[in-house]
Length: 524
Image (cartoon, rainbow, N blue to C red; front, side, top):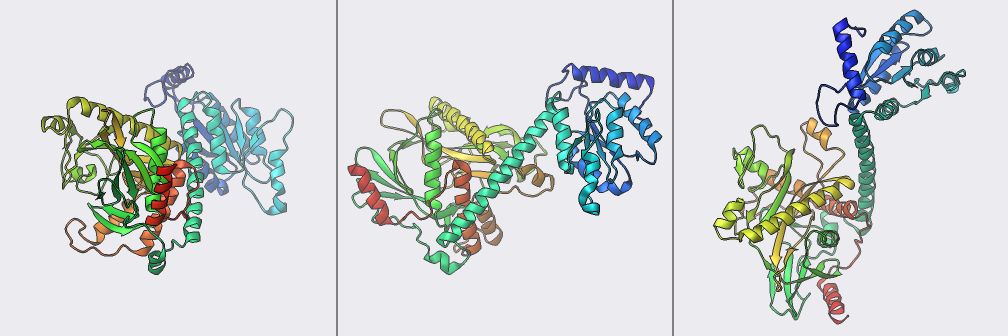
């Protein structure tokens, strides 16, 4: 029972004293911590569903809830006996009363205890809801608080208990953060959907074919000094003065090949990179000189290092070089890092890890020691780039976390300019070079065994992986128009979630528009 025996009772009291004296730290399990309790007293079993909702919300906030039935009208002596037992219990507590009609329970309970009491009466249509007045109007010296929403009652109890309990306080802060993030996501979803519809990006093959996309950059830079290097997504033109024009197209790549054309994708990637480059100059210099057009970056020419610096915070992925794919195939030593047994797909790693790959015809994972021993980079250059990569990723995760996102993993490329300065180049924290998940639903979906909600190209990758062999099939099926339209919307949504700025989907992205923007830049 709640009263307990002599030794057990003394042990609980001693634990309560240690708790009150601050004998624990949030996140640690030590013998001094006493988990708080919310006794939920109801007038009858008719209120059980409401009380169960309170208990569920309490559990999510790190608080035990104990449900009891004791009517103040029908069994007042039993109620007082139950209250006496709880008052003798050393656990920190806040009471919640659930009783409708003539709510004597809240008043009687509040008069008999020293801990706070929250009244959470069920609403009734009888008498036009006038039953609530019995909870609102109490005699002098009787002060139960009134919270009508069951989850709100649990939150109010948690805020009270959290004053002296760092663990509960952290749970409250996390709940509030999640609520904010859901609003960020909801706003970005409706804005991006409206924007896509307004410019004609809809799940219809003909409409998508009619939308002006940038797939070829022919004629964009007619007088390039050193010709053009065409990548799967970016085309690179040499300009006079040791500069490059990097043009990001709407071509969508994965599995080392182009899968589709996605409207507005190139502008999103280029502008997201621009945003991140501007905010990470305190960590590492970058190659950006100007962005004269949404699809174009003018950059310093650098000699790239032949290594991609892949940083991961979670074990996931579907490609041949992904951590999860290798782990699922039995690999435990990956890039010189040992990974223990029992990891689950999409699980957060104990710490961020650097898993480099070579830049070859077929990229391969490689350890830091092999990078140096095989002559890919010097130890000094590798150490500098590795430090930059880990600091960039930590900063990216922090910013993403503030915006309702999880930066799961990403790749960085570095190069050395003509003055010998190492700079981060190519792209930075874009939805092509990075994996983003929606933060508020991650824990819940993991608990259900579901994949996290992603806002990058992963769902398109998964579609091709399920419907063909994207590494070996000569011809790939056409990407379904509904997936292309949704991916375009997600790119725009992610732009707004990262930058908190409005995306302009109407900017012309033709080669002629790019040529005109570059001419203005050169002569300005």
